[in-house]
Length: 175
Image (cartoon, rainbow, N blue to C red; front, side):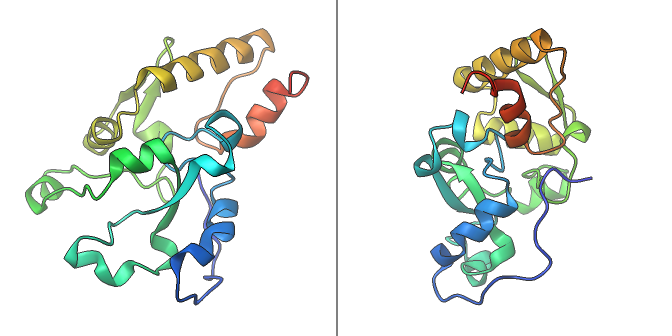
């Protein structure tokens, strides 16, 4: 089962993709579509943006600028690193591309390591990890700390579901 669930019908149509923000935020459980961190651990609501999964700046995707299902909730840093990257046709043919956690399972692509890093298990995961720098020091440290707290509480983090509710339980008495 995918990490994120998109609603069955678009709440639009809207003429400006930014009008979709509250709906996209809800679909992504207030978590980044890429690093999976929820707003509370990734700078708050103000640090999140709408990403065009298929970049609207590329000619082949220009028509998707206001497509609700092409809009993903992303923290500023992941959105900055993703930018307008998209694999070239030869890369796609070789199995490289961005993981879409609206239709794919995290654990099919990554293995969480004890140090907080994510080990890619597929070409899609390698591409995504490299382009978005998903093992940047900050993310690894947050994951490691969350893992330690989970161990203390005799819990286990499940990256196959949105992290927001798990964080609330883990940090409930702290925040």
